[in-house]
Length: 185
Image (cartoon, rainbow, N blue to C red; front, side):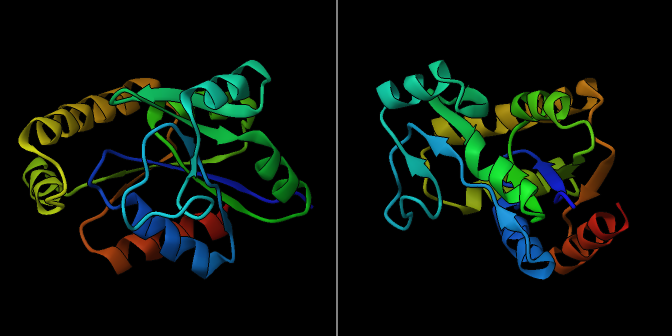
């Protein structure tokens, strides 16, 4: 039996990474690792957090159709390598993809049975607080993240691909809800 593909999207600062790690642990699911052209932060590790590649290498992956989806965000490419997803699903393992709306639309076409979930914060004020609390970005980047977060939510509503909308107001409650959704599908 093929595994389930679980797609989780949401604006920057909503808690996607934390929720995805916890959900994967509970479900025994594999987390898809994206490729990106952005530089790694001090705490990130190649092959664990992302596959960090050059722009030239990323463009080769696009040309050779080795990505399920890809997009440019804040001047860097991000994409989902195809082979690890196909292999895990064919082996019966569930896979969680944490991707933005533009990429999720492409994945929804390729995998019509995917479980499509959009995570959102309880309020815009809370999202602003979360993005500012990261304290790793300067004010111009924070403003771009906030603008992109608003646009991402609007795109998600227009895309009409998400079956589930989950509020991340409290981590364990949000993960409980996601776990219930994934088990019932």
